[in-house]
Image 1 (cartoon, rainbow, N blue to C red):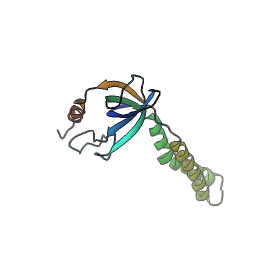
Image 2 (cartoon, rainbow, N blue to C red):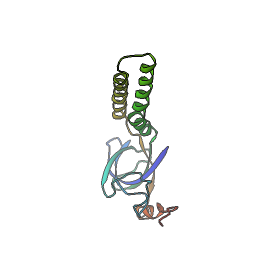
Image 3 (cartoon, rainbow, N blue to C red):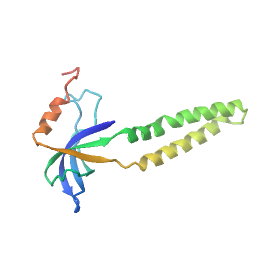
Length: 152
């Protein structure tokens, strides 16, 4: 799944191949009642390193794209997989008439959680600047986000 966000170039590397993009966190709906938010905690700014294939300069407004699939898999590995693994090993220990099957379940669930956290911390976000945009598009983006909103 690819997401797109608009930001402003804050810095460009000496080689020009990467840039630091300043993004304003906003809710996807100006009403604040929609649950579909790309970047929660509206009003804060974040700095993102992105590949700069278009050669954007400091101060330019650009659109960046980034993959969310790896982050979703990491969330699955941290929140869902330990529960599933714990239940599987509990049932397996129970079938094998092991003493204290809950201990086995906790050990394997904890190990799965630790691996998921380690994997999640190793993720590197791959952001790419896709195109240059007009600065006025920032105000329009907030209004367009309400298209299809039931509270509009």
